[in-house]
Length: 144
Image (spheres, rainbow, N blue to C red):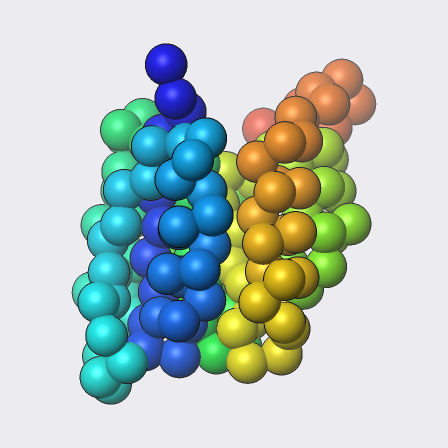
């Protein structure tokens, strides 16, 4: 059975979202929460449903894209059970999984190549949480 992955973007991340989604769809079941064009949109309208789907276990992990990666990351991290990391290189995505048990990442579409976006998504989805000494730290992240 294929792992389930949520994906969402704003208008600035739309093109990259489509590329990453098409690439991942060979090996994953990808649920696309939008947006579905380059028309200007409000990213929380797409990020909140994607984050909720990861939070409630409908999707195992999530990938978000916007111009800088910041807006979608900030929005996703408002969810109590989400740990979304801003990733601009594969090594950051690996560490986010290994040390922080990140369950979502945000990718800054305006600052990296399409090929690098795919590499980041690949690294995120192929890296496991190390647990151990990191588990205690992750357990302390939720505040209320």
